[in-house]
Image (tube, rainbow over all chains, first blue to last red; front, side):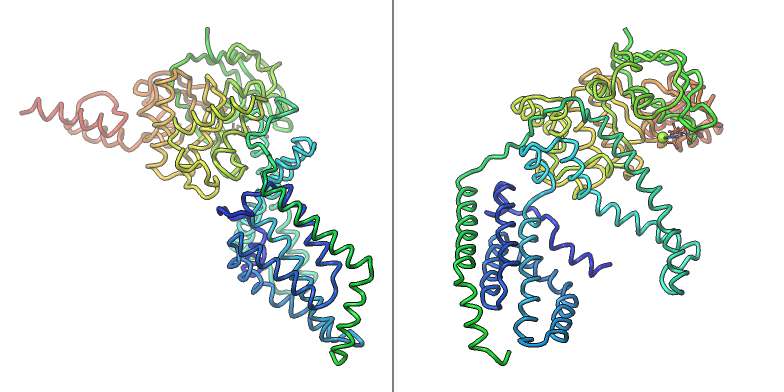
Length: 263
Length: 280
Ligand SMILES: Nc1ncnc2c1ncn2[C@@H]1O[C@H](COP(=O)(O)OP(=O)(O)OP(=O)(O)O)[C@@H](O)[C@H]1O
Ligand SMILES: [Mg+2]
């Protein structure tokens, strides 16, 4: 539970005063898309290392390096697995490819973590609304993020209640276990239904649904810093595409393979 | 003109055997602080839900009787329209606060009404000031203490400038001091703005001092209605006595305190001083 918790920490918003935190969610989203495309498109150790360096710089700018390092430690087992599985199953060029896979995974997670560490759920919802998504749906989105910790807490409550009545969830044979988990599921669903009723009540009591078109309190505005990030992201994307489409990237990777044949 | 005018209300939740409200008649005016008490399951929450139309619009069931709130017919007015007139706060802050900062939380209610951005900003600032929340306006609600969270919940509905506040066990999750603070705040709003507050509270020792009127329910009926001092003895079997009344009972039996029911420790002290002075 705690290991999973620390991994999820990599995506949990922290309020801080930094350049990235102050950006419009839409420009950060573009940055996320470009970084993700790059993580997936690149497939050699050197360019992925370069990408990771850029991401680390971004994480440093958003003062989130500590959270990132802590979560990577939580992910260590998974990374090791990715490495070992690749290493054992690949026919040739095993070391570099395995490292590439691990690096790609780290780059992709980091891209998402840069976004989610610096963007709140309601900023996101706000961005969705501005883009024309109806308020009901953007609210659904906010809520589903907002109530993840509550769900985790409720799950623990139900587990504790079952334990105190002598039901052990771990151990036993598979069939036994599956049966035990249904004992867990039923009260949990009842619990969450009750909670959702209370939430819906509170929403109604605050006038939710009174008008269709609302004016969001926080006005999303693209400022100069947003335009600079958008420009840099797009420039990066075009450079990447040009590099790949012109065949230069293929030349580069084969050169790497030629230089380090034994890996 | 009554702010709340309920006439012979019956309500049965869909799928329930028995009525949750059985012939409830109630009128209330601005400036009242009504304490609503009664054993668990007697229908207190259901009664509050009638005030903002959650019953019968959100909770379906069999509804009989006439209900007018702020001059609107509850049966034909949707909850979001009643929300402007009735501010409802519930027991658990966790299920009432959704957003990432106190300020946005308050703005959310106002956004729902479709107000202009300037009007929203103005009201948010006003409410933050009234509730003393300016210093935490950028904090996330889930980082706050329970007492602060309930204050925020109160602020979110007060931003709609309702004439009625309906609070369903607003202090159930709070320590006594925070509970006192929240209710003091409500009391202040009743005094200053002349709104009507209807508060469900189990902790009589904290709430009684504010109540101008007390309602006691049992099994869907209102069984007592009046000044707390007057009706407490009638309903002792249902809701018990708060500690200060018990202490007074013991003291007055020994002739150490004056007559009448004290609602606060200060009242009790005064009654003791009264007797002691006289003895000298
Ligand atoms: N959503 C619901 N669906 C069906 N029945 C309900 C629902 N809510 C309440 N009831 C029933 O209506 C009756 C009155 O409940 P209500 O919640 O109003 O009592 P209460 O006085 O608020 O109790 P408590 O002090 O425990 O909060 C109870 O018998 C209860 O079982
Ligand atoms: Mg109740």
